[in-house]
Image 1 (cartoon, helix red, strand yellow):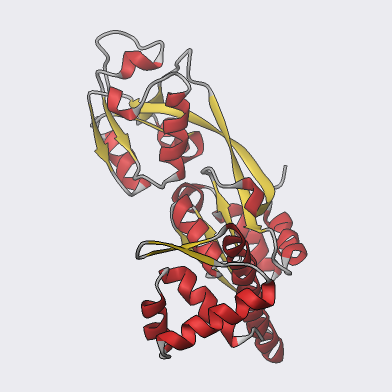
Image 2 (cartoon, rainbow, N blue to C red; image 1 turned 180 degrees about the vertical axis):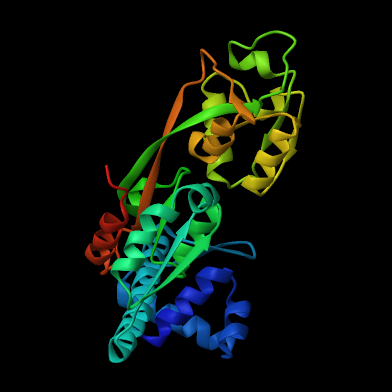
Length: 294
């Protein structure tokens, strides 16, 4: 069990405000200050600094927050595991991005479900940035993401490498056959929301050629993959998606890829989980079992 003053510290880190932390914890502001002062003496370092009325974590404060937040998450997970053991059940909670959840995960996860009848499985959908936040908060044990993430903060296991392609309706006609990215700029582009791994990968790929999504004639932002694909099938523009997400439309002939000489992108789908968790080996074993059969 963590020292109660660590709970105070974590609360102050969330709010960066002593008054708001005191209100959440239902204690006085001087008590919050005493708890922080005790920890600063205990660890021999300043944890916060002020610039006017704004409160900031010091570098050592950030380090302590990262480590203690993970310890708190592990402590809560351990309590759940011990409770579950008493009832012969096991809970696993993990997150997947929209693309992976809707088009990739069903087959590999089905075998795991069949092989573990006494496991309660919670699968959370979200974009990459949302899943990183849930990992930090201890809401999920691990995630399978397609976007970019700070690799030094996580243990990782490669799930697969997926092709990222430009797509349009099979009935879409171009004034001139596109050969490179800039030939598509007169088109309307359908894109995911900021924070989405799909959007992030597209923006980085365009940036390598000194382009951006603003170079296209106009854009339609949609937060749902199925909706984007449906709109593309109805010839409402062009898009860039993982080939796995549009495989059905390509096979049925409703969609077609747009081959481009300067756009050949493959990206990793990766299992990630917090580097400092005491459950790292257990999580890795679960992820290895979910891996698709080669």
